[in-house]
Image (cartoon, rainbow, N blue to C red; front, side, top):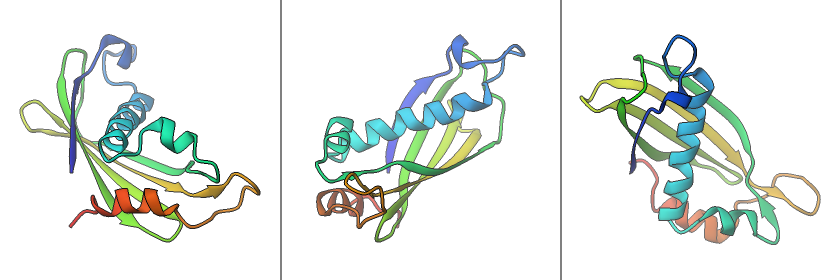
Length: 135
């Protein structure tokens, strides 16, 4: 499990002063990029792969508690499932006091740069992900 600590900035909020719904996805993605970097798959590596891309094909989020500017949060990132062609990642967002503020899930699929068809996850990506499967 990987944990990312950050805070809610004013630009993350809407006119009511609460986290704007789309920004939960932004925060999850930020945490995921740092997670991938930690496991040896920085964006430069993923984007520069000669044969494969790894686009997001599904994203979902649930909002459990209000977040406002200056709230300190931590986001945990875990690999829930690793299939032949896809990886499912789970996100949990907690306030500083431990209150569950949100959850999310994303699915990425390996796609051939040559023909745009899904393909097996490249071995080096699979090896990095396998070490971090949720147990």
